[in-house]
Image (cartoon, rainbow, N blue to C red; front, top):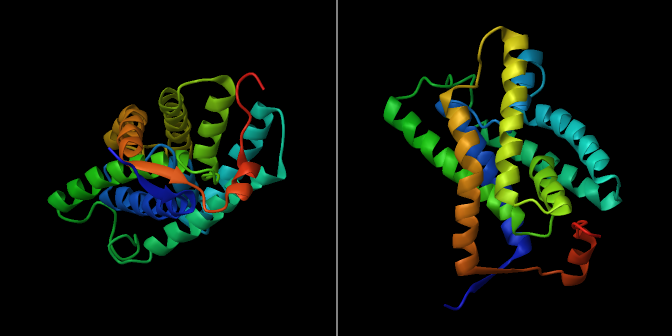
Length: 234
């Protein structure tokens, strides 16, 4: 079957928009947010003055430093992953201005149960698809997925397997934070555990489907070469 060509830059934009939308949906559904964004969400609730998107900047800045330590190197181009974080955080805060996603207008979990379930299911699916899209483009994803993409590539680990391990680690950190901050589970529920267990598998599944249908090519071929990551054996 002939594959359809899609540009890397288009995939990148779709990834940002879809991921931020998925996070807004999961937060509003209130069955448990994604374990990846749990630390930032809890930080925003605890401080009261940081928006969800701004809290992402703090958490991902810390993770970026850890990434450089694990990779044992730093390249100025790595900072573009934090640029993606800045864009993602801003788009997320924009989504949360919509009344249905705005916690000051519509309290998370206050909507009708069928709508909450629908938002939760599509939130999970959109999260997996968006992360998969980030893995298909040369442009660096936000630091979470950049960490997974870079470290799994460096050590030759299957990306979906490493993603699941990374997700479970974020779940552990988020659980510790909510108990320390609030003495109870806030934002983290059965849905968070479900996402942690199946997210990596769904990303792998959507990736295979995507590869059968699309071929990703950059518009700026020479520019894309600056974004290559170190691979195992290099």
